[in-house]
Length: 268
Image (tube, rainbow, N blue to C red; front, side, top):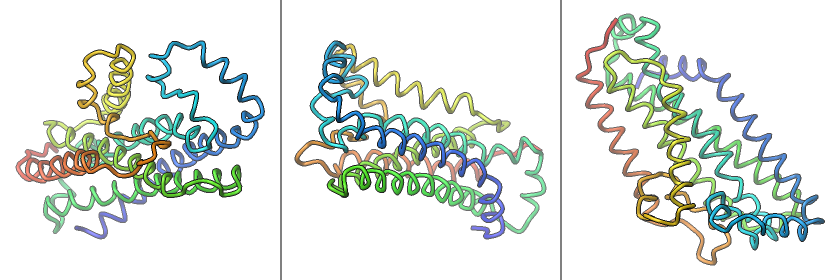
């Protein structure tokens, strides 16, 4: 790993990371602050959502019996804040870290420095990890404080930790996918549109399968299946098969990124 390259890359994407962190934090804080107001009219809200077909409620994670607890309410909207919002930024960041060298025609200068290709990949992957971890930690702290203020700290903090850990693993996986796609491209390009399409495409595919209630096995093809948001379950916690999917898939893509980038013809 190259420390100079790491520090340079950390600084380069700091502004974008701060902006997405503040955006995610705002939506988390706003939605949880509304919970105490909604509690006063919860019966009317139940009546409203009961008119929605059950298949749609399942697809959008609207469960009428879970909003009497703040974590149940938060889990309803969690997927939009972390896996989607932060996930889109993660996959864009992951794709930019390597593509910019060929786009900006700085690859020749970088490769002429006393750093190996393995060090380049390691530095950029660590940059990505720090940025994504920072976003998710900030989001967790905002959710923690907001839940505490609304409920006078009467909630299960462990459940919140597990939920946000799944969210972080999802963001990390999306970013590694973007990183790996860039490694495979002959002339690396920014794939912001493709990255956002992958995140939203997998989400809507997951949602459509849930609505149709058919071919449920196809849900295992989407990463959203492996994020457990059933926070009111008595045995809610880390599931080995979910962790194995995220860690195993991310690990394989990281190894392949090293292998392919080492052999890649970098255009200048």
